[in-house]
Image 1: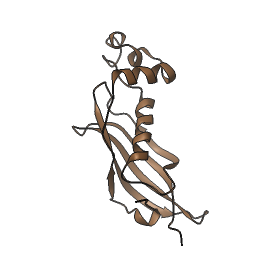
Image 2: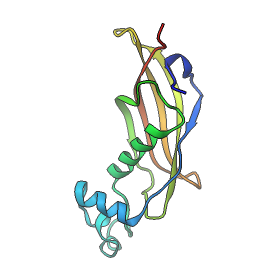
Image 3: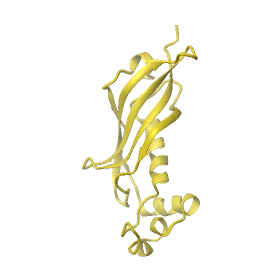
Length: 148
């Protein structure tokens, strides 16, 4: 069921499916987009700041975006970002972690300058199964109003 601006109220929360990250996926992403030793090589990562192989924060962000598009929130017109106010990686994503998203609507308002759309402010958290956050962001999303 596609959701429009009028369907989204502060306090509502939506979940995504679960996804398990693999070492191969971490290394493949890092080779192309963030080639640092602690993302590329488990042995080299042992002597890094992290002490182990971790996913790039940008890999976590890309995975979050994919999961957001598949989440039960199901925004009409798709997930269209107008920017974000915060992006944090409080805990690294590591091989074997299973994560899911929890999206909480913080605010929803009609656009003052563009009739037909609104802005939804949402807290998007990527969480391990134990509740530990691996990413947190406040996203501003463009959402259409219901057609007349």
